[in-house]
Image (cartoon, rainbow, N blue to C red; front, side, top):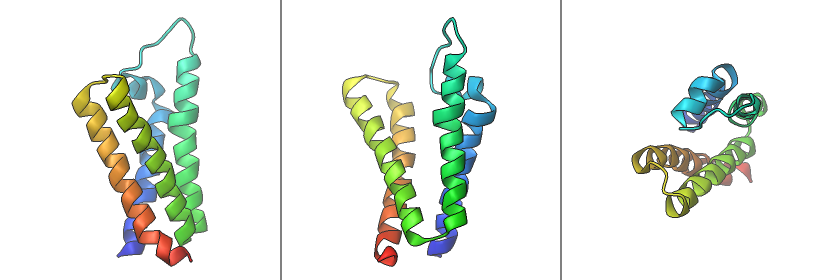
Length: 120
């Protein structure tokens, strides 16, 4: 059961990343990010929202160790922390930010708690 949920979490990570990697304009729009006079924003979407998550998820699957899955959880914990700090300081669209932050928090908690004891 743990292994199956770990693999699903890694595949979700790759799936989330593929949106940013292959459809950066769509992803930017979904995140309420507006284009500017350059295409640097699309480059950033492909890099930080796309490729970073695709490669992280793929390497976690390749390594297939409890520590790799726990570290993926740490990545999601960082994303959730940033999202919740943003809720407190930036007044983003509440439901959207809370939904994304909630997904990140659930993935973080699962991946860390299910794998830290196994990693030792």
